[in-house]
Amino acid sequence: MYQEKDNIELKRELTDAVKKEIVAFLNTMNGTILVGVEDDGSIFTPFQEEDKDFIDTKVANWLQDTIYPLPSHLIKHYFNDDGILVIEVNEGKDKPYYLIEKGTKPAGVYKRVGRSIRKANEDEILRMIMSSKNYIYESDISEEQNLSFNALTRAFTQNGMEFTERNIFSLGIKNSLDKFTNVGFILSDQSDVTVKVTEYDKDRNFKLKKQFTGSLIDLFYHVKEQADRLNDVCAKIDIKSFKRKEIVSYPGASLREMILNAFVHADYFIRSNIKIEFFEDKCKITSPGGIFNASMDEIMKGTQTYRNHKLVNIFDKLGLIENFGTGIPRTFDAYKNEVIQPVFEATENFFYVTLPNLNYSENDQINDQINELDLIILKAIYNQPGIKVPDILRNLTNSDIQVNENQIRNSIKRKIHKHIEYKGSKKTGGYFIKLK
Image 1: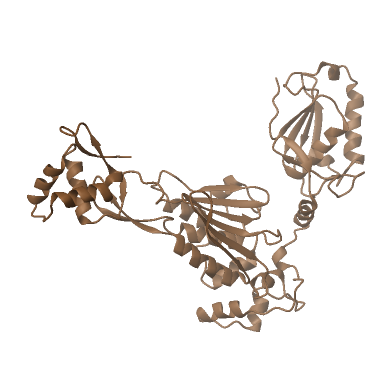
Image 2: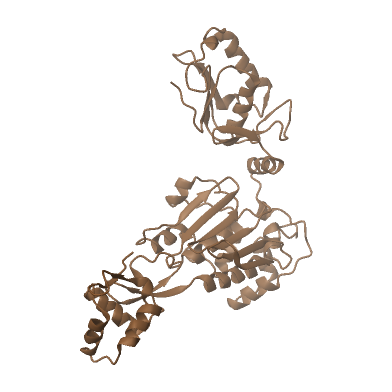
C-alpha cells in the first residue's frame, strides 16, 4: 500500500494533471509522484496494462517540450517492481518553473501546499524571479529619491557619531550611481514601513491599538517603548516559602530580541506590516518574510542567515544589536526554567514568534496585592490547615501582633478569599489554603 504525503503525490493515470504536479514540486520542494496508484494507496490495475515504452517516451517529451526552464536534470523517472511509474522531482533553482503553453502567470505556475497544489499568485511569481536572479531588495534603487534622514542623524548623534556623506555611501544608503537605495528609503523620514502594536483583553477586545509609520530607527524606539510599558513586573508570594519574588512577564532580553529580529529580518519587499500583539497569556510577533535561505530546524540549531545585510550593519553600528545572531538562543535561555516555552513558526511569507506571559500562570503563587497582615493570616492557615478565626487570633496574639477578630474576618472576606476555602461544618470546620 502506498500513502500520500506532503512530498508524495498519488495519481491513477498519466494525465496532464501530472505536469502540474511536476511544476509544483520544482517550485516548492523535493517530491515524488507515483502514477498507477489509487487515492487509497492500492495499485490501479488498468495502468499496469499500458505500454511502458510509450509512457517513458511521453514523460521524456513532457520534460523537454512542455515545462520551462528545462527540468530534465532535476527529474528521474522509472518503473518500480510493482509496475508503478515513479517520477522523482528535485526542487529547482531557476524558478519559476511553468507550463510553456501558459507562460509565467498564475495559470502556468504551480506550488505545492501540503498534499495539494495551487496556482502561484503574481507576487509569489515575482519573488521567485527575484530569488533566482539573486535580487537584493535593500540594494535596489529606491523609487523615492527625495529623502531626508533626521531620525537617523539623531541616532548617530546619540551614539557620539556624525552622520556624514561618507556614511551615506559606506553604509549602502546611496549606491555608486549616487542614487538612494531601498535600505536608505526604509531608514529615511519618508519611509512607509508600518508597525502595529496592540493589546487585547480576555475577550480579544482592544485595550491598546497603535500604529507607527516612518524611519525604522524611530519605529524601533516607539515600539520598544510600548513593549517595555506592557512588559509588566509582578511581585508574587510563593505560598510554600512566603517569600516575595518579582516576575517579569517576558523575561530577560526575550521581548527586545524578538522585536529586533522582526525589524532586521523582515522582507520589506512584501507590503505587509510588522505586528506586535499582546494577549493576556502571550505576546505574538509577526514579521513579513519567511526564513531566509535556511530551514526552521537549521535556525533552531543556530544557523545564521541575513536577508538585510546592510540594515543589520547599521543597527549594529548604532548599538541596537547585542551579540547579533543569538536572539533565539537568548530567548530560550530566558525561559529555560519555565514549563511553557516560546514558539517559533514560519510560512513562506511570514515568521511568527509567540512568547508566553509568565505572569499569566498563577501556579502556587499569590498576587502581591495583599498586605503584611493578610500574608501572616495566610501563613497561619498554611501552617495549621483547618484553623478557625479565634485560633488565628490566638496565633497572631502570641506573636505580639496587634489585631482583632474583625480585622481577620475582613481580610478573609475581602482580600484573601480567592486563596483559601472553608471546609466542614460551621462548628467543626476551618480554613484551608487552595493550592492550584
